[in-house]
View 1 (cartoon, one colour):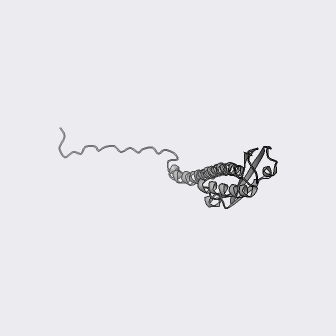
View 2 (cartoon, one colour):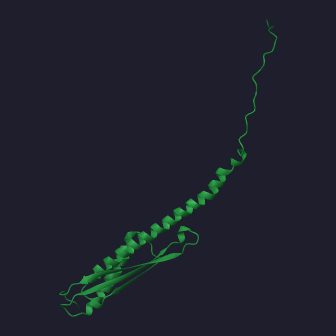
View 3 (tube, helix red, strand yellow):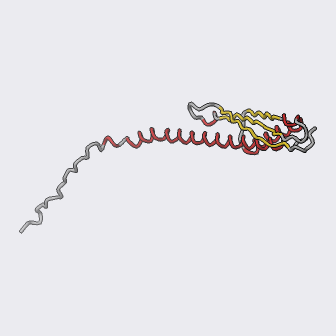
Length: 160
């Protein structure tokens, strides 16, 4: 019989084998974040720049088409020039695209054609879209978008 004062053997502590390289993995998350985050940010900025350019090109094309239509229903070449310019500028303003400079060049040679002859009015719209506010390294500061719209001038409409 054992005496009550006898000590029992305690739990055996065994050493847990170390996994090789466990201490080397400690800083990987920080390094991966430091490398991957700027790349993801760069890709996001590139997508933003591409989206802005696509939207701007669509707005410029729409402005050119609207300006050509507006010019083609005018009675005189002078009125067509004013109408095309005003229509293109208002279309660009309504689209939400901010152009640092805008040029509207209507081709109004059809107004000199004799009555009964079909002619076309062409309007070229140019808009310089700023890209420098994106802060994308190596990106151009601005990009020029151009579009041409064409509309038929009625052959039997009086021209002044």
